Length: 81
Image 1 (cartoon, helix red, strand yellow):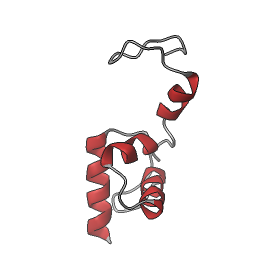
Image 2 (image 1 turned 30 degrees about the vertical axis):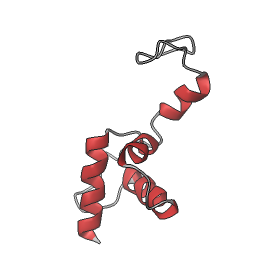
Image 3 (image 1 turned 120 degrees about the vertical axis):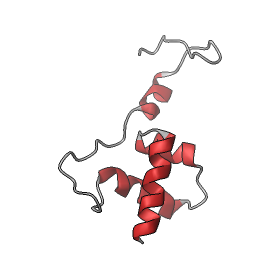
Image 4 (image 1 turned 60 degrees about the vertical axis):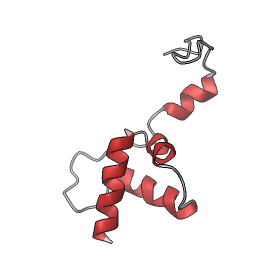
């Protein structure tokens, strides 16, 4: 996607800054075991510590993951305490 790409919803050009904000913040650790906190979980926890009322969609965008994946990870973190 380039800076002159158009936004599918509005037909407007997407700014380079907006494109950068959509890039993945972290890459998941391939060797993480179930029950361990990986880099994405850390991003989620830091964002939730800063703003516990952040929406799931905003949280997912910060972490660079799908909203459904984000919800599952947050629920798993909550269950683990």
